[in-house]
Image 1 (spheres, one colour):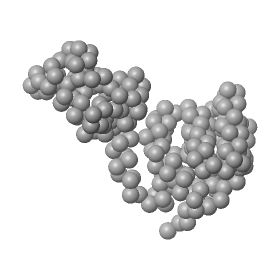
Image 2 (cartoon, one colour):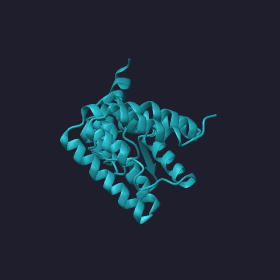
Image 3 (cartoon, rainbow, N blue to C red):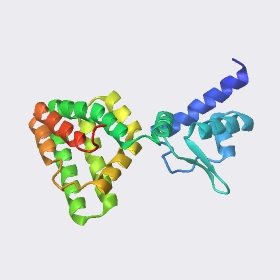
Length: 217
């Protein structure tokens, strides 16, 4: 490996780490080129190539006359997003089953008192959004509830996989709202099962709910 290639790789890693850590949040503008040169201690060409690499990777986006912005904090999420952009809703639901059924089981076994209180608060927010009838709030709070369950499962690998699919899952939830009717209390039994530590019931509720979203082929 040449010294120049090594410098570029190091610069890419340094920039990526700031994005991944949240120091440069999604939606924020990264420092201008002179600041990056000073920050990384490398030349302008190295900075330009490192930034371009992250633009190609889907983490950064150049906006004419405005600067360079963070558009994603995970290359894996970008790659997955490209792969599933044209995926059928049935395919997405099948992946949700693989992740969410196990998440529900683990959540029921591992929930803490703090987790239980958090789940019930998100459940109540979801119910309120349904009563308001605002579709964006309905989607956001429903997605928040599913994310909260996965977090409660306390498995960092499972959580990482789920977070990297979050855009597709959100779109699937939106699709299901448009094509079906979900009550404000649709997940109440699931949350009650998790809070009670009833992993069998939690699995049954999740399986039943997801199985009903898209007809089997």
